[in-house]
Structures are given as structure tokens and as C-alpha cells.
Length: 615
Image (spheres, rainbow, N blue to C red):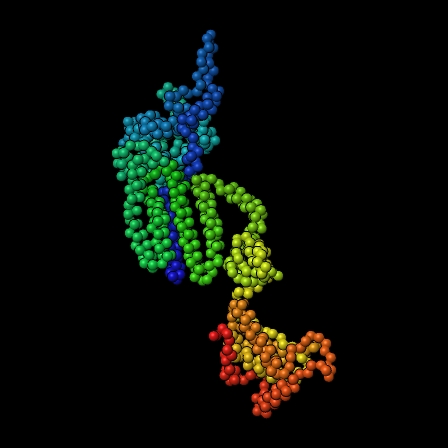
């Protein structure tokens, strides 16, 4: 089952990376040359009416200082403050703001009052002023973001901007390979009072700018059919057009998604079903959004709409959804992988790991969104860094214990149910938690060891061994004869080779030396069992049989005490000694005497000893 998981996930990742790369494609060549405002700038842009009121409060004191002195009179005559203009064209800022208010209210007759119509393009007359005002509003709406605060509130405009004293630069609009200045010009009103209007030079460029950045043939027709009400920077016809594109993309992508999910589902594995659901759900939505993004400029959106779209709120939510679903898929994959590799105990780590990863993904998505809408995330990241250090210091021990748990689960020196020795403590592992491990001791008490300390302690896992070592040391009486020892050595080897519970190799029984009160023989072999109780039973059987061999040889186990041999003391059975020596002499005369049992004889007697577990 597991062998199908990896290809599914690999295909999924490749598709996701391809389409995420496509999502980075800009809206178009012209779009890359336009500085789109951020959502933060759009939200912080003040209301036009509020700007007018605030500007009036700032401008009137300055205009009063420039007003001519009032003639002497017997009666008090009110002093006129600056150019009194019904269209608020006294300073550059109010002129621009008032023009935008007129456009917002679709009052293009009034909006035409802010254009200098003295030198119009060929083929245009003053009666075309409202249409030129509308075309200019479309160009500015799509290609020039105007910050009200940088516009001059001086009656004579900016004085040190490198332009003529009667001109103020509002911004620049790219058309083809050339940038065109959008200028305000201080012009005389009919009564000789100077006011600010869009310069005649700018007005002459309006048709060309509109041809480059207008709504296009289809948009021009639709804009005249549907009401010009706007929502989130888009007119009604643009919303309808966008929904039609969305519908077309959804229908076009549907067969690809369905076929892909069907091919993957054919594998008939739990992971293939999960991947198919992922493709039919979040991946499908993400694919539609990516394609829609690349066709967004077809509807000729305004800068405000682009700023909202550039924030990528919906896209970030969908991408986050996709990544979180991918995390779930990989979580299921690793859970199944660990179970199939007999490491089910490590599954407990998957949940906290995926939770931490999900939190990390959401935090990164939030930071990307903040950066997209115009906030500087440097301060946020610096704050998170300082906070992270503080949290790390405060949770140092907890992190140490968690890493210890991670080591225990991944390296798996012990598992739940294992009998082991930790330091000087013997016990059965009952629980391996994220902070500590519980051992039930031989006294049936529970000892809790922090994981950070446990990984640094010597651990001996008895459950993990495949067999038990049988290595007794036999101490014989010092008056045991060499032939008796030879007889015992061979009989011990026969016993080990013949016993069904002793491993075939290694098997050794050697006379190793002289003790202070004994002659020592050592045995080295392994009992073929991993059950401790079974090992004790086999060990008991072997010990009893060894005692029979020693008794048959006519000797005894040495007693660690000082013994004086007197005539009345216990004497060894001389008949048994003579019998053993005669047997050894026979082996010697036949050339069969050796300290190692011949392999042929070992094979002949293998597993010939009856043992109770075989019954």
C-alpha cells in the first residue's frame, strides 16, 4: 500500500510548484510600469470632502496675508480672503479634490470646469469638455495614484519644483515608451482672478492617453450600457465581466481536474483518495484563482481595485488552505509509513509536529498579507524575534524535554512495554510522553524520568535482545583429576550441542584456570529465546544436567572455604573416579581424546535431549 503514496505526493507537489510559479507572472507589460498603491494607502486615503474642509482651514490664513489692503472707509467693509471660486480652484490641492468629487458624482459638466480648454486637440471643441473630463478621470483612475498631502496648498503652487512658476506636476502616466506629465496650470479666470486647472498641454494629451489606458472597445460599450456605480474600485460592468471570466475559467479547468483526480483515484489506496479529494477541492480553487489573476487586467481595473487585488487576501487564504491540506496529506502518509515499519509508537509525535507546522504556515501567510497591504514587516519580524528569544529562554527545559522525546521516538532505544535498565533502575516502560517517560519498577512503583535527562542516561533494553547468554562459571574441587576435567568438558559440550534450546554457535566449555580454592571451567553459549521466564526454565534444566555430569565424573562443586583433609573426612567416590579414568584412557587409546567435540559427533547428538517444552 505504501509504495503508491510517494508518486502521488510527488506529482501533486510538481503541479503545485508549476502553478505557483505561474501565479508570480505580472498582470501585463503596461502594468509593470505603473506603481500600484497598497491596500493600506487605499484605506488610509482621506475622504475628498474632508480634505476640502481641512485645506480651507489651512489655506485661508495664508490667502489673507496675500490679499490687497482694504481701502480706508468710514464703515467696516469685509475683507475678501483670496480668490473666491465656486469650484474650489484657488490652490492645486482643492482643485484636484473638487475635480475628483465631481467625477465621483458623474457630474462631468462640472468636471470640465477644471480643464483648461483654450487650446484643444484637433477635432475637439469646448462642448467636448465633459467627455474629455470623463476620459481623463478613467486614465487617472487606472494609472495615477494621487496623494492629496503632497499637493500644494499655496496659491502660487510649489515654488522650487524646477517647473515654471505657473505649473505644478501632479504625476506621470506611461503611454508606450514615453512618460507624459500630468500638470496643473495657474490660469486667469474671466474676471482676472488666477485659479488652477489641468493645463492645456495635459488636455491635448487626453485622447492619446485614453486610447492607451481606456476601457477598450468592449469596455467602452459596456460602460455606457450599465450604471457607473462602483464597488471596491470596479464598475458594475467590470464586475459582470470578471464573473464571466471566472465562470469560463472554472468550466475550462474542470475537465483537467476531474481527469487528474480520476487517474490518481484508480490506485485504490487511502492516500490516492486523499490526494484526489485535495485536487478536487483546494487545488481546483487555487488553479482557478491563478488563471483568473493573469486575466485580471482584461477588465481594465482601477488602481484601487488593483491595490485590493494585489493584497492577495483571497489568494493567500486559498494558498494557506492548500498548504494546510498538504500538511494533512503528509501527516497521513507518515502515520501509515510508521505503522507499516513497526514504529507505531512514533505516531504520537506527528500531531504536535503538524500542529506546529500549521501554526508556522498561518503566521507566514499573515506576514505575507501584511507586507502585501503595505505594512513594513521588518518591525513585526524584529518583534517576533525578540519575543521568540524570550519564549525560548522561558521554555528552555520544556524544549529540551520535547527534543528528548523526539530522540526517543525516532531513534527508538526503548518502546512502551519494554523491560529495561535505565541507570540503576529496572522496570517496564509504560508511557513515553512529550515531557517525560514512566517506568514501572520491579517493586510495582512508577518512576518518572524527564526525557531530556533520559536520553543522556545509559539504557539497557532487555526486551530488544533476540536470545539470552548462558555463561556459568563452574568451580570444581582442587583434588579433581585432569581426566575427570577432560571427561566433564566433553560431556558439557555434548550437553550443549544436544540441547534443543541452545544456539548452534557459539558453544564453548573450557578449563580456564586455577582459583584459590577451585579448578574453574567456563561455559559460553546462548539460549534461543527472547522470553525471560522461558530463559530461566532452560537455565534451570541446564544447571541440573551439569550437576549430573559433575556427579557422574566423581567430583563436586568447590566450596569457598578452607578444608582440612583427614582420614575421617569425606572421601571422593573412588569407584566413580576409576570408572571415569578408565573411560578417558579408552578415548586416549582410540585416539578420540580431545578438548573439542568432533563436529560429526556434535551433529549426531544435536537436539537429542528431550525437553519439556517439546512435549
